[in-house]
Image (cartoon, rainbow, N blue to C red; front, side, top):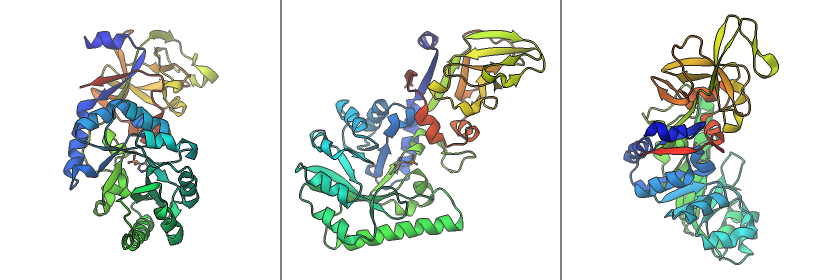
Length: 373
Ligand SMILES: *Cc1c(COP(=O)(O)O)cnc(C)c1O
């Protein structure tokens, strides 16, 4: 049965929903209230499929979601996702009627942005972003007057206020100092405003903030990468034993022999130093395999890790199967996941000099997703 489904595809993503449920249950145990979990499902839920992941979370009682764009938010609503959906970044003020129509909460980027929304005279729910030191979006924490102006706009219904930490994943003395400074600036502002205003729900932490500064949970934790059961980087930083939700698989399309001194792939960057057996695997950088894995990444075939040889192409790559017995066309190639041995996305990220978040969000623009219950 399984094999039949897989046989339809050249390469595919497997999403293990049991692992997702396990991670969510594990995380919920660490919260005071399940309502504190704001699931970050931007970038198609980090490549996992935002609609399906959000449906699963809705079924588990999660009713708070965050995305990056209006289109992502509308897609969730059109698929009947219930609860609050917060857009964490810019939306064109022209589209405020869509925010209203689909009951989507918009982040206020700064005072001027608030004015541009307000002048449309359409009621909209908003969370005010506060810049406490990252210097990305947010009104600066000490611009009290500007923030009060935002709070007074009649069409903006303030349901929350948040800030974002920029070095909460680094445990150096300097980074910790900076993080406490950010938290202090934000909470001082909030306490001052609370004397005269209803500022709604307060939130500060994302995944690593939650790991290292759980005492500042407030009303929500905006959790992305940890839901998906992986760390941002290698080696692992988190103490939680979560399960990776996503696997990335392909299969052997073709096997060929090359002689010593022959080269493999574009640019002739790999030269065989002995007679070799090569498997051609139908997945490439257009499927999200970083080109930086050329001549350095690994895959798993028949329970053994083996090297990628030559440059990763747009749609294909070549791997060395000289020392793996019995490889046949159609055998499964695991790029992320487990087949006897494990290859985590963290390792791929390290080899590609980036973080897991980037790898996951780039995977699968054209790969089918198979959801395993
Ligand atoms: C993406 C994002 C998050 C989620 O970050 P993770 O590290 O994946 O948990 C949280 N907050 C904001 C503002 C974000 O942009």
